[in-house]
Image 1: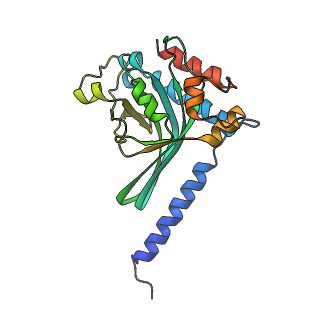
Image 2 (image 1 turned 30 degrees about the vertical axis):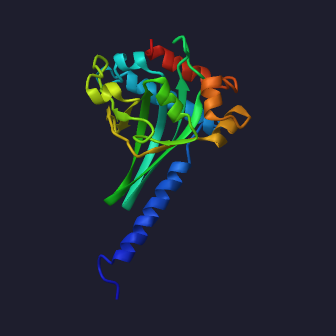
Image 3 (image 1 turned 90 degrees about the horizontal axis):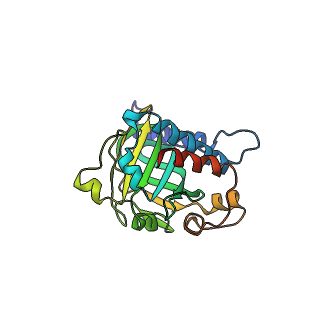
Amino acid sequence: MERKGDPMRRLQMGCAVLAAALMVWTAVPRAAGDSEEAARVREASTVFNEIMEAPDHAVPDSVLHKAAAIAVFPSVLKVGFIFGAKRGRGIISVRDANGKGWSSPAFLTITGGSFGAQIGGASTDLVLIIMNRRGVEHLLSNQFKIGGEATAAAGPVGRDAEASTDIQMRAEILSYSRSRGLFAGITINGASIRQDLDANQAFYGKRYTSRQIALQHMGGAPEPTAAWEATLAKYVK
């Protein structure tokens, strides 16, 4: 006879929840005729625009003024049952050396893990502000772990806020998340970021590395790159 609260049954149920959530996450909704990669660029534009249109909860101007690159990961999925997992797909653009423009988007993935008593799932928008060239070089490497190769900190929030703490001033990456309308700085040390070569190839028609796209300006500017760059230029003066 099955006992109530049988551990094996709970584990099986948890695995089913995890599998179902991942299936939903991979079924990315997009407009007819729109590629998954183009949809990702459009989503990133929408996320960043919505965040910056809320002055009391936006990335501070003082942070954006110093930004060397900006990465946006729309709808990062976190699910858990006994163990947890995080995974998301996003894009990054690097600011031109003269400060007057941005590179075309290069595609990235982010993964992380956690352990503990947890169940359920959540979808979160993640924004990374890379503050210097060293942070850009780390993030565009084949793979790196935040908090390992590059220092990271929860970013300050509010259009007029200052990145004033010692940790924030020394950090190469300031990180933010938005979940259920709440936008705040978040610590994501331990997450791993990789270039998404498959997405780069699908979007640009050639298997460019994210470094070639963001730093060497290879690949051109397929649609909707112009709209994404215009969104960045609107808020980063």
